[in-house]
Image 1 (cartoon, rainbow, N blue to C red):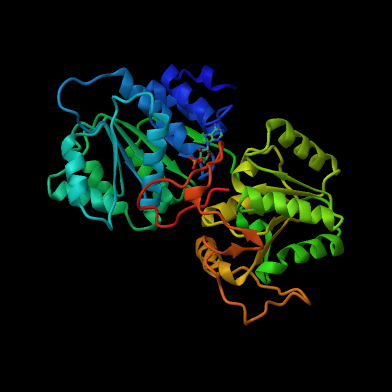
Image 2 (image 1 turned 60 degrees about the horizontal axis):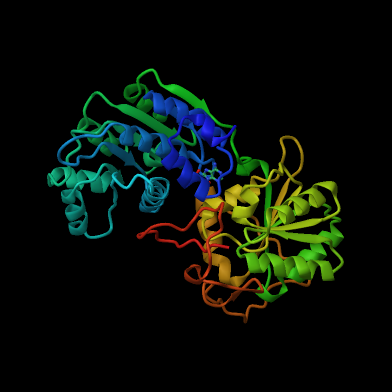
Length: 423
Ligand code: AMP
């Protein structure tokens, strides 16, 4: 399936092409045509499935197709649980809509001054991305007018309910015109979500894409505490002693991936690096060698691994923890095929304790620590900031200096509390 066959207009296809997307993801294949038709949608899709483009692309097309004369009014409202997601979605709208400059989008969330938001709203926007609480603040102050909304998107609805936004959501819905298109995206379907969907959606098309991630519970997870300078040595030891034959190793940076692959080779472990700076040919070869067993360790940056057609593996190693906790879940989802053993191993140095705590908060549980004999961390070593110092034996490169990987998720938007470091 190609993007061309989904019925999207040239301006959107151009933007998508420039993002380096070659084919739509399953949720995009299913959602784009029905959203274009104007139908309501109930979609089960997690982060990482391409869900944002699945609603953004057709929504932009619908707006562009019907010009409204007169004052610019809010025609699409996207409700999201967090300011990070708000900034991310707004960034995506900007990216995909870059050749439809007639459409204006804005983002509002709490925790920042309301006045610039009021000024932005006053100038007029077509698409508003908002967290529910701040949106209601604006509604109370009459600084937002939702009476012309044509499309409502609830993104990560389950998280919004988990965060206690149900009443706010209902209040917002009460401010919208009755006649509108509704799109509800949720990773899970609790009774509460179904109740919300039941009252909100009219004859929805239900779309469920296969979970991209093996639920964390099915994967054996372990943290090996280790000093930052000894990670490579520990990885070689684990691979050799455990006779691991096919290991996907995650690093945070492209440079780190290259370096680690070379070091593993020197340790006698066949390895290849795969990331956005490699040509398609080099990536394809590395992957083929890995699948054929000629390469034991495939060292990848997160975003490069996302595009890889490798299914489930016996071992996934986090050589460095990701900055975004959700990425941990994506990574470990590469292991643990139903019924077979899968192990996700994280090599965690003192610099990464905060990242580990964030991940455990997301998982809702603690990952067992197991120090490996001879690799117990030296308690005298102090934590260093990951962005500026060295981490995991790999030179860090702050995002500002780094390029963006073509197929990758970006660290987007002002207000994102945690900056994602691009590999
Ligand atoms: P999302 O599930 O919306 O958070 O998207 C996850 C990531 O996938 C985003 O960084 C998108 O840039 C990327 N993405 C979305 N659609 C595609 C596609 N068709 N091909 C490759 N990457 C994509």
